[in-house]
Image (cartoon, rainbow, N blue to C red):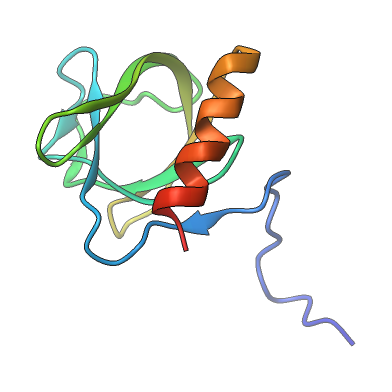
Length: 116
């Protein structure tokens, strides 16, 4: 019997943890996040990240982000996204919006290389 007290995972896509030692960051367009947001996991539909906090309520608002390596090499530029989850431990969930077919393929290649 399933434990009905456990939270329901509503993700449509499987998520994959970023490999140990890989430093993947998010650059939000605009000054809405405190600190440097660090990607924890990635899926074809979005990502999970940690940050010190959000300066303004961005939940359910569209934001543009760049995904970059720790050495500042850009992986994905100006992705339209939406913050869909946050908790009291500075953990957030972000949903990708309007990915092109090319971006979807590139994301799969990236996940094969840098995710567990």
